[in-house]
Amino acid sequence: MARPDPHSYADPAQARTKSFDWWAAVDFPTRTLSARVTLTFTEPARGGPLDLDTRGLVIESASVPYVLHPADPILGARLELQLPAGAREVTLTYATAPDASALQWLEPAQTHGGRQPFLFSQCQAIHARSLVPCQDTPSIRQTYTATLDVPAHLRAVMAAAPVSRELNGPRAVEKFEMPQPIPPYLLAFAVGDLASKDLSPRARVWAEPGQVEAAAWEFSGVEAMIHAAEDLFGPYDWQRFDMLVMPPSFPYGGMENPRLTFLTPALLTGDKSLVNVVAHELAHAWTGNLVTNTNAEHFWLNEGFTVFAETRILETLEGADVAALHSAIGYQGLLEAFVQFEKHPELTKLRTKLDGVDPDEAFSLVPYQKGYLFLKTLEAAAGRTKFDALLKTWLKAHRFGAASTDDFTALVEKLEPGLLARVNAKAWLDEPGLPANAWRPQSKKLDGVMAQLGGVPSDTKAWTATEWQLWLDAVKRPFAACTELDTKFNLSAAKNSEVLVSWLTLAAESKHDAVLPLVDEVLGRFGRMKYLKPLYKALAARPETRPRARALFEKNRSRYHPIAQQVIAKVVA
Ligand code: BES
Ligand code: ZN
Image (cartoon, rainbow, N blue to C red; front, side, top):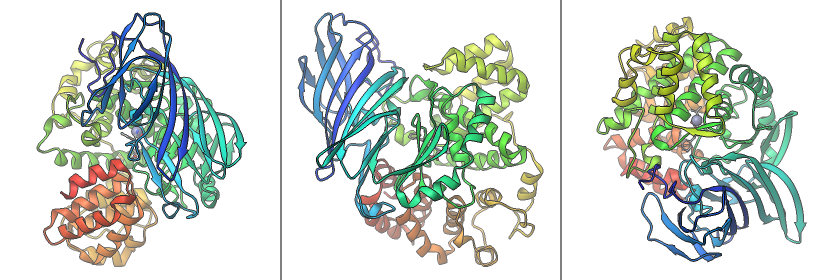
């Protein structure tokens, strides 16, 4: 039978994993995990093959006969087990590869403290298989227990409930339990020199010791945020909302690992100006973690809904004006994504076909921002009250499940007959680009920024980082007055990394080469792809700076995350 997820060998006709028990010993010198996993099935197997996803794993033994097939460049290697009739579980022992795509092993110098190594995982979209042989598709939710054996002077944290920590000579054995069923892409852990501070009875921040206080201050509003989100979307179902401040090479702004959101240290601006990223990852607790997409072809259900939810949280906490500014920044990002995919318009549809396409390569702001605009367009047509009710019904209908685009349209048609036709949903979902009826944000603050795109802005007294970011993203390039702009507003000293990168991108695209040394420094400081991509792209676009892009990439490459290395290599090629 055809496999329903183009990125997994999982076959619905075979046994289905219900839970797994994972043991892994972390070895920094060899950059490997020695591991064992027992997969337990939803019911006794009928007998026959069971296909698991793996990438780079060295299988040492299995409790049943198996064949490890040759690796596909995108999916990895199919591990075909032969289950006897009646089998309830299977156990495998194996080791991960030193270049496991889900892991980044950091030298002490790459951490904040500079004294201890650090290890973290990033499994979305299809990297869990490089850690654990599994049915690596979001449509198969699994609970798990885990034991991590780590150096005793380090601490392990997981996106799960901690159970115990026991010392065993030079090692510590830490146990965890994940009672809520998760799609495999939400498996996550980190090992390092970590400390924590409580922010509320259900929220705590973890960071390297030297960053805990700054992080606790930056994220002190988190409980108010959880309250706002619960008012909008219903009770928080994951018990805890802890956060982990990552090393600077973390390739994303945030990752919604359940119970333990991972966040880039770039959020520690000292003025809470980037807490929208926390709102975004928190929103995923409903849109994504509670109701996930059946596969990456419906990724907009995860990210479009989450941008919608994030913006609603911001609107509650900071007002409609601020929410509108964020929407406008997102719209600029969408226009940029349409340019990026000029030669691949099919990737600008909401419902995509990803057979033979690596999800990391297809990644863009389209599912985020076009998805968001589709939902806003539906909301505007239905009215907020009706659309809020629809959203709640959606979350209830697929709670701890997985849903497709068809599931969404079926629900909308049932609850609001005719609404889809009224907004021309077909064009939104299955045609490239942006339909003409797209909702547009409106606000006084937004008008104030957009009215000053003609030259160096003059009326900026009330501007926050958000207005600056929007102005810098929206102004036409090349911008002739970069020197005057920087002299007047000292953008090169911006503490907010979004503002800094938006400024450097504008400057690089405007041939304002005075910023190049600072661009070099920023490309060495961060590993967040959102910052690396536009800067490398701007350098690579000009023959004069292309060699600089390549030299910088060679210099920094080994310190970037494996996913970032792969993506940036294409940009500078
Ligand atoms: N889940 C994503 C990050 C992700 C997406 C990792 C796809 C791997 C594959 C996360 O929720 C996210 O969207 N992060 C954004 C935050 C922003 C939209 C506020 C980021 O990292 O920039
Ligand atoms: Zn997201």
